[in-house]
Length: 103
Image (cartoon, rainbow, N blue to C red):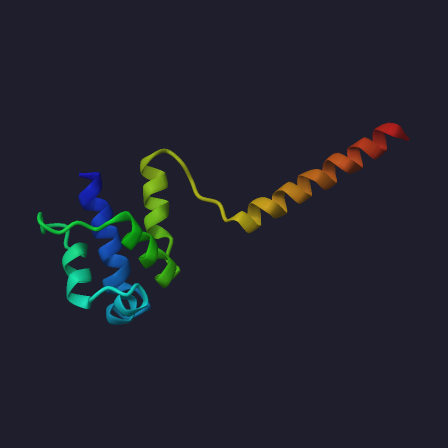
């Protein structure tokens, strides 16, 4: 069931996203008809590959598929920028506390 739901999520990203599906197919260098077939969760003979899914996420800048996968596995996603910023803030707090402790 997870596989069908995941394929449906990617299909929604491509067909209902802000970038036309034909533009997505050009961006990932895959024929439009092949892409649509791979995105069909009811086509038992065509599968959406991980590489194609990754290229779609990069081309659309839509990470909802990754968020769905993370949620299904009990995780959340956090942008690297926010993580780095948070680490810097934690370092600053630690440095201030260390300075206060030595005063």
